[in-house]
Image (cartoon, rainbow, N blue to C red; front, side, top):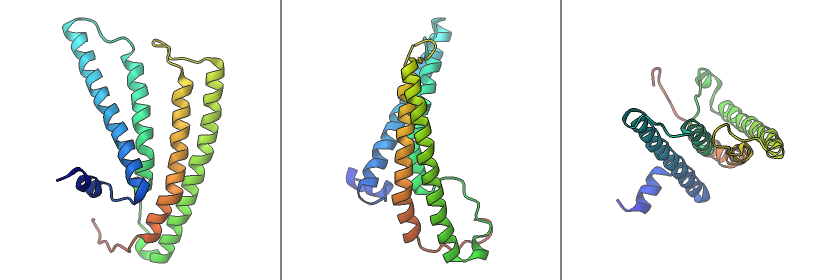
Length: 177
């Protein structure tokens, strides 16, 4: 299968969302691979050479934050969060769609204001010169990344999340699916 066909199959989103999703999942995959290699080297160093990698814990924490917040916009706009739909069959298609649009507004607004507060905390962290304990990595830059990815999540949810709910066809499910 050519690369373009693979991308179209695995990234059904329209236009720029396809490429944003590919980029963000590529970042997550690269970080996950790096964390896997780091963990393997750390374990081998600890048990074979009796010396672990200095700061591996801090690098792992940073990598996990990068990976999680790179995936957040993709999971949010695809509706990949846990959903409880006990009342959907009783409320009807139109009410469920209205509630879905309302939840898009609530989620995107929440992410926006959360990002504003996180960005303020990042600025304070940078002004104070806060760094990690062993490697002395400034924590403010990672916090700014978290705020920016929260803004990206809010924008993607408001635009493509709403589009997905509006264009979604009704799905009939039976009990147990």
